[in-house]
Amino acid sequence: MGKMVAEYNDEVVKLCRQLMKVFSLNLGLEEDYLQNAFGGDEISASLRVNFYPNCPQPDKYLTLGISPHSDPGGITILLPDDHVYGLQVRKDDAWVTVKPIPNAFIVNLADQLQKLKVLSNAKYKSVEHRYMLAPRFFDAQINKGLQEFKGALSSFQSRIKK
Image 1 (tube, helix red, strand yellow):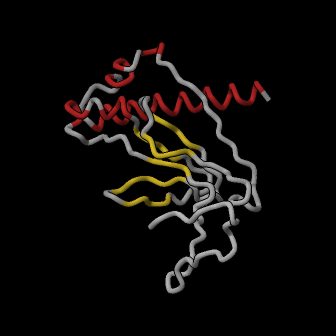
Image 2: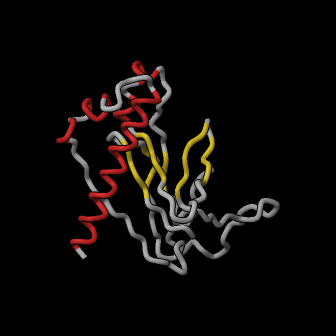
């Protein structure tokens, strides 16, 4: 399995190098400009894997996702599950769910590319995103509200003053 992960990582790094070329050309720069700005042939890359097995009752077992953030690096390549709609990006003041496209990567431009916004005239922006696993909420019915629980207090407890 380690060999397969290493090969996958190598291919993703190749993809990132190609994307850096495209981004450089899109900005009217030399093809290798961004790659050189990120360290040339010694550019660093890391592989992080987040796997959440199927949970039939995510609310019951308190499953967590990944809280809102932007990625600190240059480019993030995500390989989503085609049937899981957990990734959300912030657009204006709302969260928008990203629908995975089968056999496709999701490319997030990260903070280091945004820091070049003077160079790119803000063409590239780091996107705040989060990953939701169990976006379900259980609330009282709006028209009923919450009722006092009769008998919930023992004779040793006093009521909270309103």
